[in-house]
Length: 191
Image (cartoon, rainbow, N blue to C red; front, side):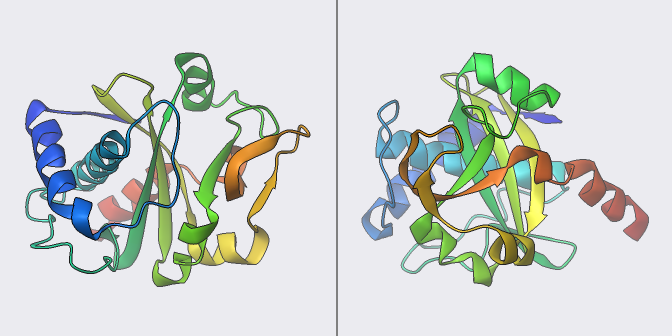
């Protein structure tokens, strides 16, 4: 499932990233993006999630960023955090079509250990991606209840293939994520 990203979303994401920059604590760095680019794609992911669930993304934007937020959006009364990543095309195709194996590179969705500590604030974690260097579509991967994550997964530096993650993180097997369509189905049943 994907959402087309508009130019308006991209521009507003840059505005919001600039406004928040002085107040945000960055948990990690990646070699393929600046912190400004990461902040921007994070906002775009939130805007895309709002659009998918019929929430006006413009009205969902906070007035200020003096403190950390309570959640990115509310889905069916559930405080939801959106985790956005960029993935090289080769792996993104496999994630999107459901053929990626959990133990291969990019087979798990990572939650940085410092973000892991914040999970108890949320009810749901929604995972999505952009194909690296392409911001035209946001692809929804799936979601999990935070209780499920906290009960079953812990941060680690070790990858299942013997390598190491770029930072200590909670690796969620992609196969364990629930399809977004379940949340959308629930939403349709509410009307």
